[in-house]
Length: 96
Image 1: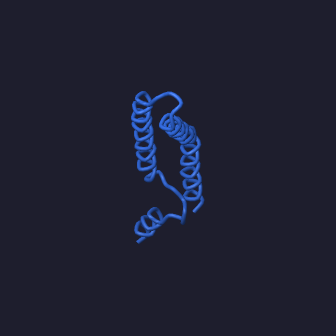
Image 2 (image 1 turned 90 degrees about the vertical axis):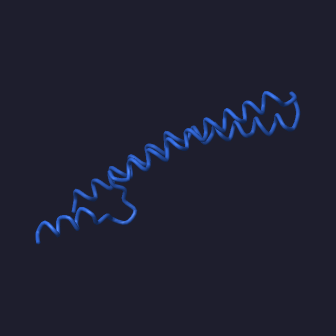
Image 3 (image 1 turned 180 degrees about the horizontal axis):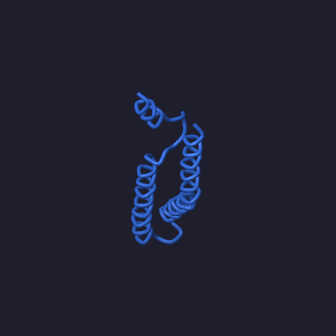
């Protein structure tokens, strides 16, 4: 009976808290985002090489590359937020 209570306590999570079990999914999402950003940058760069200097197409590809760069710069902050959420989830779990 006591083991059953412990199992229920381990499986119960607080609302909004992350656990160590969520870490692989979060890391996988970060990797997939990185791959999409890299492939997108390669595609936009190859399109940019085919455009004329000073054209509207070049302006659009420059804007696209800047947007990809801006989003890529936030990946470190997103990773820190995920780690912080997992640590807070562990602290909440250990307090109960």
